[in-house]
Image (cartoon, rainbow, N blue to C red; front, side, top):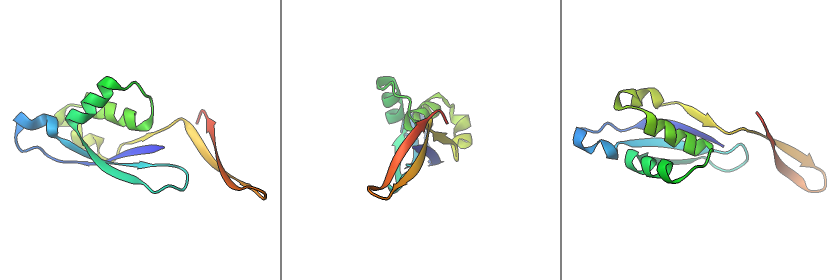
Length: 104
């Protein structure tokens, strides 16, 4: 999986900094369609606080939470990948299968 921050929305009122929104895309190395959505800073904080996963989505959310407002522009375009390399294996009997190899 790969998570990429696409954009963030400027918050006109500093009192509402927690509703600052980040748009992102999640992509898999296999045949599924990319998933695009957005998340508020408040929701990102709640997920990071509650979940201990180490996947690309959670690494992206941690980067958002740890950034200061002055650094939000530098997050746009940043990619977070997993530790797996996906490869398609073509079997004449079973068709195409996806395998993962840890460590890349």
